[in-house]
Image 1 (cartoon, rainbow, N blue to C red):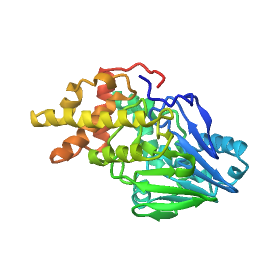
Image 2 (cartoon, one colour; image 1 turned 180 degrees about the horizontal axis):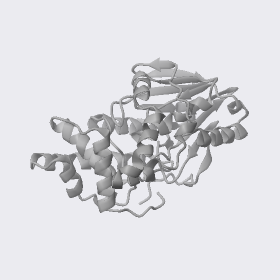
Image 3 (cartoon, helix red, strand yellow; image 1 turned 30 degrees about the vertical axis):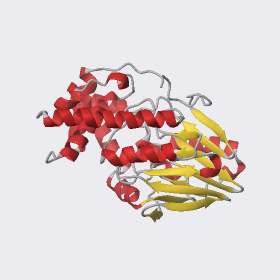
Image 4 (cartoon, one colour; image 1 turned 180 degrees about the vertical axis):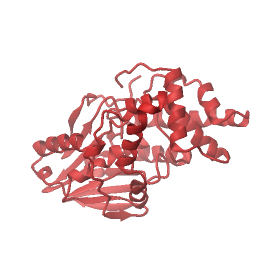
Length: 326
């Protein structure tokens, strides 16, 4: 079964949705290879998420400008959440209003690009974990990034305009992160989901609770939309959303059984048979997902980021996965 939208090939670069709506896709959708969107009306242009570094973002913005005259000067940028692959390129839009949920801006300050660069610098001395970190983040130029924090913050939801188009910013976090925001454009029958959707790849539950994420999927399914642009992976339909929802419900149930059986989160991650989700990319994220779920179930402490990456490295080394197109 494919969960990609039949109208759009999963190829790197610009994809025209119609009515002044675009998506920028970055296969294979794994660590750091995120998507972006462009919303245009009259002489106004809004970008949904920038990319992980300056060179990638500059290439994307140049393509946007070639496609739409209005995009030669981006008026607004929306960051759907604080992970760097959705906001590090903000500095490439110096004249734009940068909009985000308050929690997104607060967490961006806690995770500057220098933090990831520090992990990469230390990687040669970290064994398998260092190799894993390099495989995830080595392709990106974090030294190019001058972090630009959003200047327009909102709590709850926010409605804005791009020309005459209404754009609804819908806060659905905490889920993947604290500030997760959907960007719904009714006139285009399109929603940009940020990392509420990983299509063809395992979602990563950094924050939880998982029920908020399931609720966010239900909210998307209830929308009058035809085109759904995920944070990672190919453009999808509501069938793709239903598959992500199914993943979250299934993993919660499997993790709960192992929690009640007395396993720790890492034992549970290695024990869970991924079944129909086994060929989704980055399956080692099940380690983080189990850690977050176990904390939600009542485990006293959640491991720190270094321990979680070490656990993912262990899983990826023990169970290597062949790369494949989503």
